[in-house]
Length: 256
Picture 1 (tube, rainbow, N blue to C red):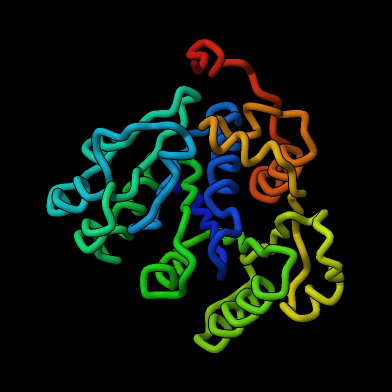
Picture 2: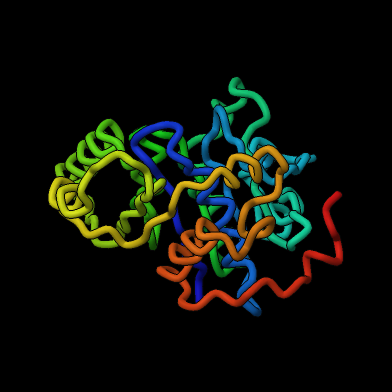
């Protein structure tokens, strides 16, 4: 059985996509006998390795240069491992190298990862270009992150309308409300009506998220009992059902 591709997207920058993607990947990585890889497809300004405090020796640029004989073993050797066991396919280290990666090349990498991994989480840039549309088409699940503010809702509405116009199915799109406890005074029912889909999960705002990003330790590890960590768990449960509590295996490699 091939792995599931879960793409995290947002139509507006600064919405917390990378925070969601990293926490989601770490939660799915707790599942017994499941292999998880996190792909940073924000080719110009990817922050996955920064947020996880990883220093990759190789990035997807190395994979792009080996496409003609890229296989599962070679691609696996180019991944960066987090202390939890989560694997990461890092984005280019500089924006100029983004041009080395074609849409077809990245799709080939994902096909290879699907052979070896149960869950492939893909972080993205805030745009609707050829790469993002190809990712949406290839994904089993799409987590669309929407902030509780009008510009974010407006952009999400435009993105969803564009997908429908292009005859993309939105059946596998799940709406995730970020900073759901903010004082924006937007009504959930109004948002659902505007976007023509239900809110599937909600992640509350919490100061511990910013602190966890700066520490390089995602909140589901740093503060697993917090309301925001439980919010991320509700997103993971849309994909995999009940998520086990942290086993402590990453504690063997305790972070400094």
